[in-house]
Image 1: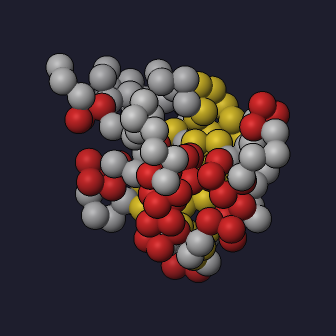
Image 2 (image 1 turned 135 degrees about the vertical axis):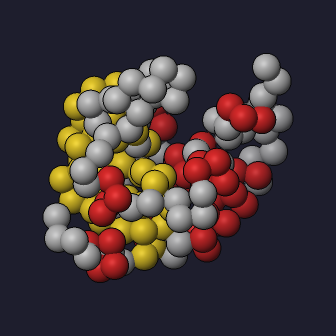
Image 3 (image 1 turned 60 degrees about the vertical axis):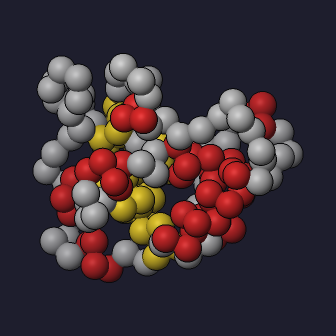
Length: 151
């Protein structure tokens, strides 16, 4: 990966463009970007154990989703971990990568090796995903933010 790959990545500004990237080996990652991740892997925040890959959310559409909205599928994948920006700092952003799954993390999330960074995800797309999720009016579903739960 070239040292300036982060600067060269295109930026996806809406969910329909992100839907165009859906695939079995496409993932969303929240971090400082591919350059920052190139020489590292994720770490289990409970134990500090280095994991064999980078934590990421798959964009692969599951068969049970059938013919439902692909934009809603993508929106919920982004919505799940949007709290990581606040938790890990302002330089943390959502980005899309093509990767190879190398294991599963402690939350059963895919751990991947990045084969190709594809794009950044703009705040406008994140706002669109939040609007779509909120429009579902579900009181039983929400972010996977552990910091907001009672301990």
